Image 1 (cartoon, rainbow, N blue to C red):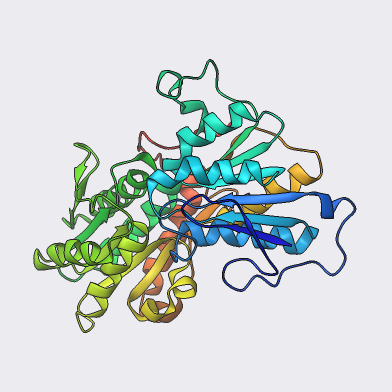
Image 2: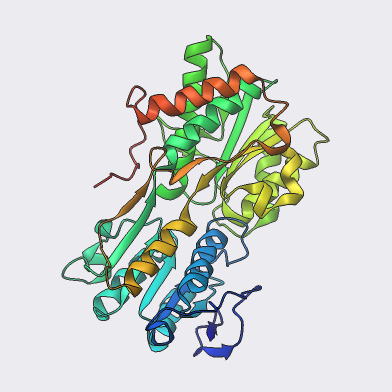
Length: 366
C-alpha cells in the first residue's frame, strides 16, 4: 500500500501505486514489513526533476521493493509546503521519513525534535549545522541521519574534462541558489579547470563562478527552466562552449541551450547520469557528476527497518563510490584516450590525498 500527499499538505490518500510507475511491492515481504512505513518529502523541484529528487525517490522505491514495506510521499511545489508536507508524513505514522534537499533542513530538525520516535534521513544537509536560534530548538535532534556527498571531488574531474575538451578556451557554470550543496559543485569544477591550466600551461576561463570570491551566476530558483536557458545562453554568448548547470530542473534549460547550438556547445549534468534521467540531451552530455543518493536513501530506510539506525552522517566520496563521473556514453569515442587516462589518474590522486580539494563547503567524513 502506498500513500501520496499532495503539495498542499492535505492528509494522505491511498493508492495501489505511488507517483510515477511504482510497481515495487516485494513478492515476499520481510517479517514486520506490513507494519513499517517508509516516507519521503521532495523539495520544490518535485520527484520528476531528472536530478536529485528523482534519484532519492528511486532509493525509496528500491527499499520498498527489497523489504516489502509500505510507503508515503509528499511532493512539494514550493518552499512553503515543507511544514505541511513533513507534518503529513508524521500524521501518516511513518516509521522513517527522508527529506530531500538543503532547503528542508530547518523543518526536518524541527519535526525530528518534535517526534523523537520517528527516524529521519535528509539528503544534502548536515543536521549538525542547524541554527538552534532560528529553529527555536534547544539541541540538534539525534534521530536524524545526514546523507552528504563530497561532489567537489567529482566536479574537479568534470572541470578538468571540460577544460580539456573546450575549443573556445571558455567554459561556464551557473547555480540555482548560492547554497553549499550548489556551490560545492561549482567550487570543484573551478578548481579542476585551474588544475588543468596549471598542468598544461593553458588559460581556460571559467565563466559564471569564481571560487576565490564566491561570486557567480544563479537563476535564484530550481524550477524556472526558461531562466536556466537564458542564463546558459548568456554564458554561451560570452564564448563558453561547455556549460555545467547546477540548478535542478532549471538546469535543464541549460541543456536545451546547448542542444540548440547545433553541436557548438556541450554540457555536463549533475546529481544523476543525465543520459539516463534526461536521455533527450545525451548527445550533448560529455558526462555527469553522479551522486549515489538512491543507495544512501535505501540504506537509511533499511537500517531503520532492521532497527539498526545510526545517525552518523554518510559522506559519499570518490573513494567509497558515493560520487563520481558517469560513463561518457555517446562521447566515449570522442574524448581523447590520453585525457580519459589523465582523469582516471586524477581520481586516484584525489583518493590518495595527492591532490587536495580546497572547497570550504566540503562535508567532513566522520
